[in-house]
Image (cartoon, rainbow over all chains, first blue to last red; front, side, top):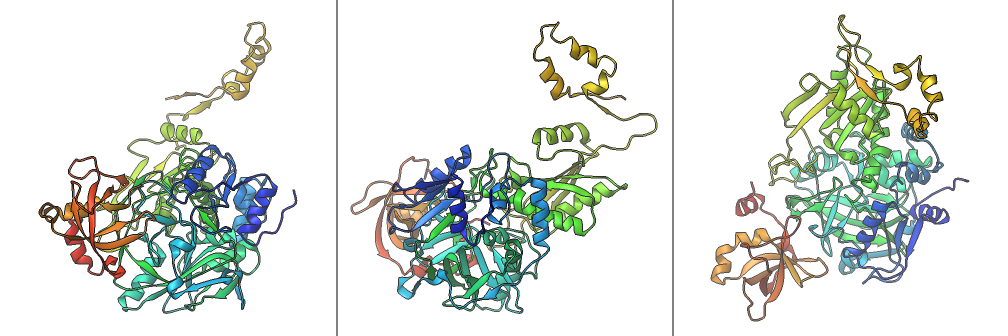
Length: 515
Length: 99
């Protein structure tokens, strides 16, 4: 199929529609558990992407869509590839290569005078986030109504560095939105606390929609000092058009669906959480976090609100949070590893729950390499905040096959020699893992206090053997019966075993230890 | 969904005041999940002018004092919306006993 140019999420949804992958929901649905319920079910059974066109309590024309970039079964990267102008039939390896190529060629944005994101401008008493945006109540038990897919844009007070990032956002009232800031994240640690220490308000803009790559880069772990908007340009291979905000000096994508402008005041907090997170569990604690006082809302005509129904892909790896690990974070890590010259063939998260751990298929070129790589992957800034376990396997292992990976782990990692626990550490760690205690999540008195963590890397690669043994050899059928395999296959019908041929093709995966 | 909802932590914090029938400052959310700070009388049994209020725990509804039913809340005063903002972190944590 011809690949259509996509400038924003509307173009993207049009393409899905042409492909028969969009479901227009024209019946009235409630923002309270109905939109997200349909989205969750669609995620679970790998159905079409829903576009809600009649939302209870909102004017005609206001729309919403859930998990619009999620992968389909067996091809997590497919829709993300489509959204950046690649064929949906591209292989994972080719997708990763092209992603890395674009990642390495960022393009600076340009400023324009007008943008459709300011077709409607609401300021002063007209500001009401809950009345203007169909903010969903996503899971029963959430601390309130959450925005989950956006770019929070803030500027360093001492330089031109501008950060675009995605933090879950709890809309408390018409003009107050709190955010979950975790240890190690750039926005709280490099921006907000700098403003707060100077007793200065931090201007904030929240861009929702625009090109799909806006969200992709806002959720990618880019290093400090670079601006995500340049990499959005790289992904789309053209400069992002930005327009100046109405009530502050920040710039946002001109074709955003919604823009929320405001200010984050020093020494102020509002409780945030609990929330059903991407790991598939609802948990807290509910604790004080910085919040934005909204000064303006601007939006396009007939705006569309994208929503991630977090945690509903567990088991199917099928909502955007799980998809994004394998389609965004994996290539970002590959860029990092290739730049450092590590002979890693591939890294990925387990398909069942991508953000829980990391798997790397690698050569072992020299003694001590596994330790070096294992510790590097657990300490590299950004990604390592989200996982505590890293598994190293041989380079010929298909690490998208979790059954195979599990077999490698249980058969090749020695319980005491190959499970390398760092012990407890005061390292930055996302506070979303369910095994963390409240103390490990960080003191409640400060939004992004340093959480504690414990990390472990597991060497499940084939080890060198001493001179007295040959080491283990996988018992494939061909290797076990070299002289009789033709006779066995040739006589299968005589033995009345019609499935024998299929059995033979799958291979016998017996394992024998020769020592 | 009930007209109002409130956090179980606040009920625990004001256990004595609730028992004495003294108004307390609490955060409640309405049917639009819009949060408000209010002064309110809270009771485990129906009170005149009171409305059923669901108790929220971290991750869904929770029981208060092992009673699987809502409390009754009568708003005495709607407070300024900035009363909802936490400005004294040390006092907040000490009060809730979370640290």
